[in-house]
Picture 1 (tube, rainbow, N blue to C red):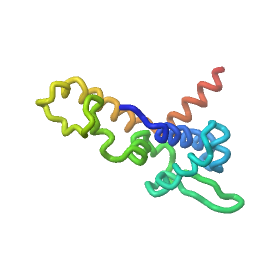
Picture 2 (cartoon, rainbow, N blue to C red):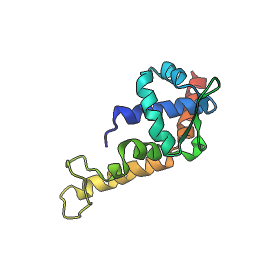
Picture 3 (cartoon, one colour):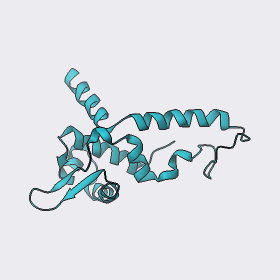
Picture 4 (spheres, one colour):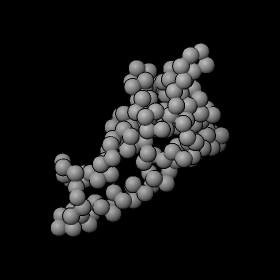
Length: 139
């Protein structure tokens, strides 16, 4: 499983937002994490539609979490950006894999893919933010 730049930027932006009490302007996140602001602005609408973010206009506007960042898994973000079928992809084939046991690579890839999916399901945006904050405190 390889992650697109769009997915990476989405996760990075959400973690930055969680590290700042859950409300920031897109421009602030973009500057803090060196993400092109116009690119980041295009990532917000799908995350809003998915119920991960809320967007507010005006002087005190910006983006915030629509649900707590400790309830948003990395897998939630991957699904929004990459699509529902992402966790069914095989790195050895171009077409989505139905998980056929007759495939010679089934026993190699499926267990690894499942572990990766489980890790992403179990890891929340808040847990990543907390680990980054703890690492910065140790420095």
